Length: 501
Ligand code: UD1
Ligand code: CA
Image 1 (cartoon, rainbow, N blue to C red):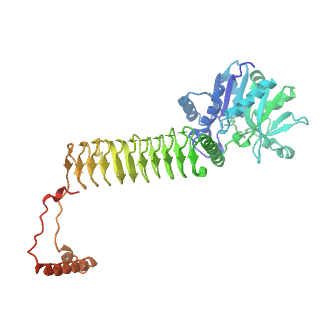
Image 2 (image 1 turned 90 degrees about the vertical axis):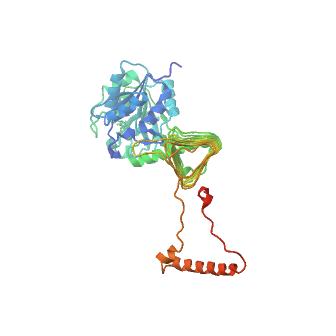
Image 3 (image 1 turned 135 degrees about the horizontal axis):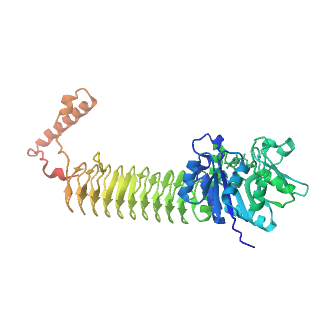
């Protein structure tokens, strides 16, 4: 066979998508980590066409910007949407004097696969056809153009629903707007299109009727799965397409060795990478370039975006964005790891912990109710419950450094910039504003003072006062009983107590 690379791929994307009722161009609506247009271009990309042209119109700036970002295709502007035939005519004008195969795909068919387009192209080349179209049998063909065939089963025309009579409307084989054309024959027949139809548009579908009338070969391939050709015209169809794409992605990963305990509530995008023996539990969403390594368990109820989870780590009921979770590390339940969080091996971000731009060394733990921002924590250190890394002075952010084997007491405020050295402690409830040298304990809190009898005097008549009175009377009774046998006792001062945590 000669070179099977198509000369041109034309993506139709100029329509308004009125039924989406959106300020965003239809083909830029997203599903599973890409725009619809992105999915279509990704399916066409392996064909290695010499040119890929996207016909843009409505929302052309948005769409062209998206194309410029990915650099995958060139826009062709269609000022007025005079129909799919008109759109392809403009694309062919832009393509220049090309020869060979022209592939046409609609920008609103995000489920189309490379292998289906390749099969169409193969049939086209084998049959030396003027045009080869992808058809599908639809359980509900409403809205689609119907494929009309003669007694021998040869395609004779595609008839739009609005132009169809009752007999044609009964047909359930539809055109999918996916075609391969011979460039020269396409160009010649686009020039012959009229707007003499129900919508007053130049229909690309009419090229088929013209070719058949001229005795040209028109071949067809029926899609194995009609769902692959689903055209998205409104948000109900978008949701359906998204669900089908999700199923396809999940099926791929399950076949690659990933356990997904509840596929119905698990969602992920096309950029996610998973290793065998990853387990995903219900209500897990994986976005962006999230990567999960072997033996890791994520979920239930977790959302990970651009996050790396290393071997054997667990993430439970948590939200992670731009984080890296080390081997065997544990996250959650109910934690929020923001961009720049890096947990070392076996590190822990426990319950109700928020972290941002923070490095937590191997075997270090932040078990409960803490905020760790702009921080570096060494190895084997423990950050007590309710510790706050006070990183923001209202104007600027500052960093905190905690050494190895440090013990930060519960409810410590670490007012950055500040350092707690290797093997150092802080006393619970301290507001640490100065560095704590290695091996020292930083104590920074008010000393406790007890005012005896305060409740009975100042809260007389309350249940507390009543309990206080009973306790006092019992104490007095016990004391007088003891006084018979021992010397007077003296209440101790608060001596070294200030250092107790
Ligand atoms: C089209 C086909 C129909 C087929 C269906 C499959 C025609 C006349 N009809 O109908 O046979 O069953 O797709 O989904 O071709 N577009 C432009 N410029 C235009 C008009 C449309 O770029 O002037 C683009 C749209 O953005 C869209 C695609 O072409 O991506 C199809 O247009 P749409 O209006 O959705 O056509 P359908 O009515 O779905
Ligand atoms: Ca459509």
